[in-house]
Length: 214
Image (cartoon, rainbow, N blue to C red):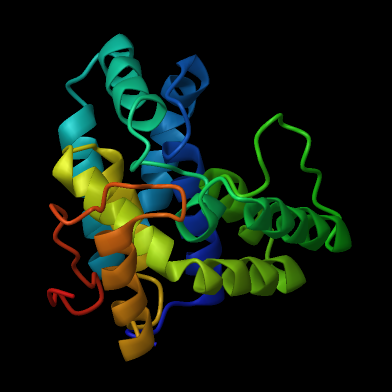
C-alpha cells in the first residue's frame, strides 16, 4: 500500500466519493453539511483532495455545477464514469464485463436497480462502502480497472472538472501503481478504448500515490 488507511476511513471515503461523483442535485445541497463533517475525519493526506473540490464548488450555484457536470460527463467520451468502457470500448467483451459486475453485486445482496449500468463508478463505490465482503469485492473490481481510473483522472484534469479532486482522493487510497499498470495506462492513453480511433496522447498521466509522471 502507498499508505495505511483504516477500514472505517476507507468506507467513509467510498461513500462520500460516490455521492460527490454523481450529478449534483438539491439532495446534495441538503446533504452537504453532513458530507463536510465526514470529510473532516478523513486522513489529512486524502482529505486535501476533497478540500480542493469544495474550494472550487462552494462559490458555484447548483445550476453552474450541473452545467459543468453535464458538459464533462455527458458530452465528453473520454470523461466516462463507466469503468468497463476503458478496457472494452463498446465491444461485445464489454457486455461480459458488465455481467461480472452485476453478478458480484448479486452475490453480496446489493441492489443494482438505479437504471445505471453496473460499472458506474459511483455505484461501485457505494457498493464498497457497505464493508465486509462487499468492500473486498469492490476493491477487486477497482484493481482490475485501475488503468481506466488513471486515464479518467487525466481526462478530468485536462478539462478542469471539480470531480478530478474526488477521483484523486479515491486514487490516493489505492496501492502504488505497478510497472505493468503504468505500461497498460500509457498504452490506453496512446490507443484509447478498442472502438476509439483517436488516442489520448494530450493527457499527462500522474500516479497520485507518488506524484510521478507515468
